Length: 138
Image 1 (spheres, helix red, strand yellow):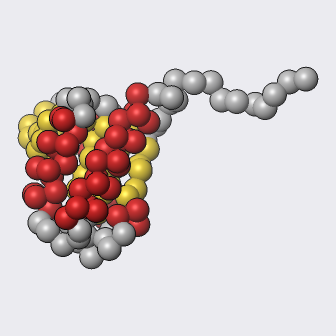
Image 2 (cartoon, one colour; image 1 turned 180 degrees about the vertical axis):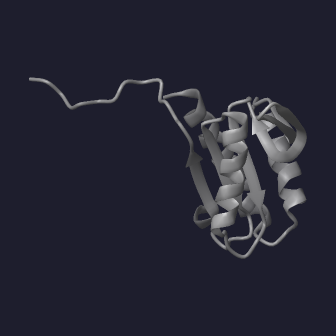
């Protein structure tokens, strides 16, 4: 299993536990702080409110955006606490992923009654470490 899959599994596990304990409806910042601590307690390195800068057509755009959580410099986590996710939320995450050249991100909406309905894994130009399986040979 590759590193991104292990990390996303830990993030989802921590988020599910937090949601079970606190339920939906708190401010996003509350979930962000608690999730960050939970991930650190599980041994993951991360940045909160990580600034996103990018270069385009000869110009560097500094601190154009901020990513909620940037875990192990491999996975972007965008948190929400809204009634339901909308397509613009996934586009926001995909924008960060493209600008930072990060292949895997998680969109987590703590506002859902059941958190499993509020988790989206987003991939962009993802390359798995393992070769594809083509079935068994006799």
